[in-house]
Image (cartoon, rainbow, N blue to C red):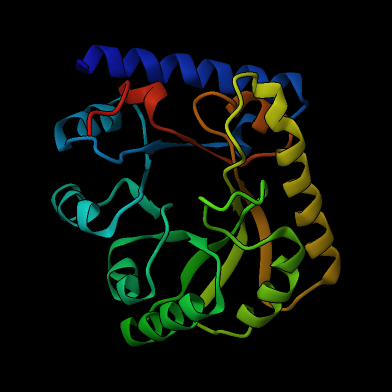
Length: 232
């Protein structure tokens, strides 16, 4: 995909984000566009940055290391894939945020590594909203309990929730899952747990991001819509 193709894709997505925000009575500035750069080479990532992208998401530590070290910052880099506990030390060094925290063991190790690095690591709690066995994430009914256990870890900062609902051909079918995450966020906010901020809802991908925006998403994660079909 050429530089012009990527720029055109991003411009179209930005227009659709603005329209979805306007139609749902939201401020466009509340919504960030993440370019998901899994399997995307450095040159195409740079094309996206030239077109205004300032946030990239990666799924795998090993793949992301070379990219993050070569490209640097900006953009911001977020870890959005399943993170093994033994890779936490790399995540703390490479990423501005880890969106895929779904268990206490991982949080404890991220906190330990962040303390050693002298930083506070922003995180999101990943929720398996569809209960799919093939996906990571804490069950919705266990999310509040997990957050209560993670909140005291002083070198982590819980800033919201992330989810990836089941895939549907009709984007409207994903709406209940997005709405459920927003409702869960509101329930957790009512608990007033110390040191927990819930301003971020990371939800919505290439096929359903407009519905996600209507349901309150603040970060949409777009890969194919920017870079085309992935080549593995």
